[in-house]
Amino acid sequence: MTGEFEIRGWRPGDEVRLLEAHNRQFAATDGTRSMAHWRWKYLDNPTGQVHIVLADHRQHGIVGCYITLPVPVQVDGRATVAGQPVDLFVLAEFRRAGQRPGLFVNCALKHYELFGGTGPGQNAFHYGWAVPNWRIGRRYLQYQMIRDWDFLFREIAGGAPPRAVSGELEMRPLPRCGADHDALWQALAPAFRIAIVRDARYLNWRYADAHDRSYRMFECRERRSGRLRGLCVYAQNDFLMPNTAYLVDWLCPPDDDECTDTMLGHVEQLAVQNGAAVIATTFEKPDPRFLKFQRRGYLVYPTPYFTGVVSFDGNDTFFYRTLWYQTPGDSDLV
Image 1 (tube, rainbow, N blue to C red):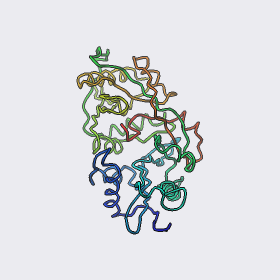
Image 2: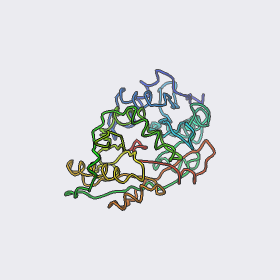
Image 3: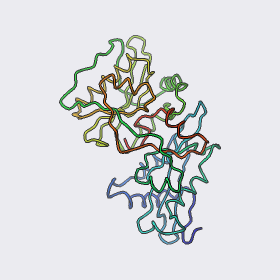
Image 4: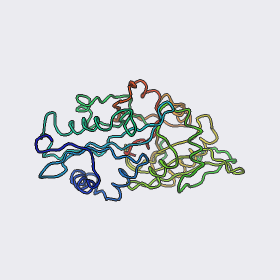
C-alpha cells in the first residue's frame, strides 16, 4: 500500500471497474470500449496470460494502470512472450498522487517486478511506439529507442495499373486460419531471429476475431495442387494518412517472387476498388522485403513514430534493431 493506493496485479473481477476507468479516460478521443472488446483483447489473447498492474484507490477505485498485451514470440528459436504496452493511463486528478515520481512510473515498476524476465509466463521484452510517454519512460523506465518506424507506400489515387501476376497462382479470401497456415508459419519461422509467432491461433485472434477494426485475410495457393504459398492481411483506415489501405501482415518466403507479386497485385487492386489514396506497409530495413517492395514501386515514408523496447532478457538494442521481423500488425495502431 502506498498512501491511499494499492499498486497491485490484476485479479479476476477487476475488469468491470478497469473498463469503467478506461472509458472515462479514453471515450472522448477513442470512443467507448465494450466488455466484449476488453475480454477479447486482454483475457482471450493467445498466451492465456493477463499482464496488468492497477492503481486501486480506497475511495475512488481504479484510477490508473500499466498494461502490456502479451503475445507469443520466438527469440532465436526459443518460444517466449513479449508485451506491448497499451491503453496506459492515470486519471488526470491523480497524476501527481502517491510517491514520486508518480503513479504511472510506480505502476510500471510494479509491472516489471511481476511480469518482466525470462521465467515461464514472463515478458522477455516490452515493445511499443511510446511517443507520448517517451520522456518519462526514458528517464525512469529503461525505454530504449531501436529504430524509426518508416513505412513503405505507393500512391494509387485515381487507379494503378494491374501488376503482372502468375496464372499458376490464385488468391482466395480466408475467413479463418487452420493447419496448413500453421505449417506455413513453421516453414518460415527458422529464418526469423525475432518474430511474433504467426500461427493459426494468433492470426485468428488478431485479425478474424478482432473487435476494434475490420481486417480481411487472403491466402495465395497454387491452382492445380492447392498448395499454400503465402498469406496476407488487408485493412483500410486513416492512420498516418487519410483513406489509406494497409498490408497489415505478410507471410511469404522473401525469394518467392511469384507469390509476392500475386499477393501484392491483388491487394493493390482491392485498394483501388475501395477508393484508397495510398497503400502502405512496413518491414525492418535489413529485411530483404524492404528493398523488394521499393523495386516494385514503393517509396519510403518517415513517420513521427519510433519503436522502443525494454529488455528483460539481456539482449541489447542492436539485436532488436537488426533482427526483428515486424509488420504493421505487430502494433495495435493499425
